[in-house]
Length: 330
Image 1 (cartoon, rainbow, N blue to C red):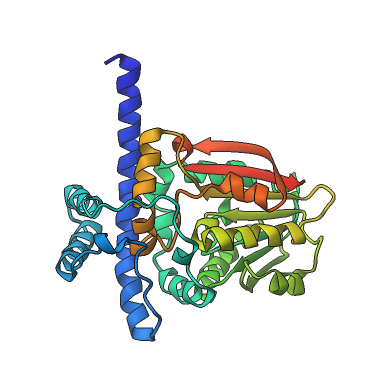
Image 2: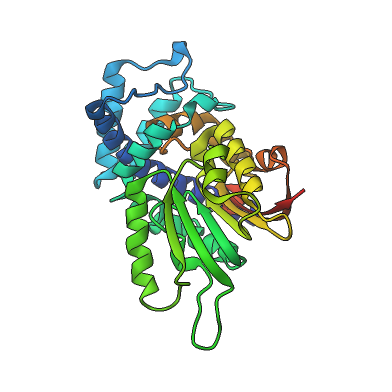
């Protein structure tokens, strides 16, 4: 094998290992989520698995134990064995159905449970290794004017917005942080309060709990033609394809027609064939068993086009596992 081929193979293995790590963290959230769903009476959506591939209760119990061992200090080998067990059930995800998406009530409750530990998954060391901090900073450096952030979560983006100093003023006049989970927004408020005291954020910040997939609700709250910049990072995948499309259409209605831009940073299907194959085979399992409902091989570019938007600029990270889009009105 040529040296370049070896380097490429090593890169792929590193990325795959990182993805396994994110799945490992997700499994821990899944165990908590299913336990709390049972306590609070929510229906637990089964995985999008063909009848012939349904696992026995004994297998599921073994997998949960392996997932817990891995997430609480076990060996990565145990997690890889768990993944192998999943794949051995002949799961072929392909296009993940929209039914995999969390319903609004489920999402609100579920993310309230995630709030206290959410940052360890989407903002921890593995996320940094995957260049997510770099991607957030690069994307948000373009924000200006009246900004709406959809799916703001615990406020992981807050530190990456353009700051103001004694010498320069921020190009941002206001930011609305929106999320369906009140628990997540409370964490975002704490983060914003700490940063606001340094004088680096605009004083005009607000936090709104709402459903970003409901155009009528969003238009009633904000009106049309209202925001210079709309930001969404890693929430489209959780909404499912139908919900993501509804959310993008809603963003289009809220965006200022003259010069407004929508900025997205999302999970997507990788450019590398091996990574793409891995995502396709595990998308349904990851979404149902611990990926916070996230369909992580989503075709975001296609959804953008269907929503009547144009892609002004696209940036690929980690071989296309994550992509940033700057979109304008068509």
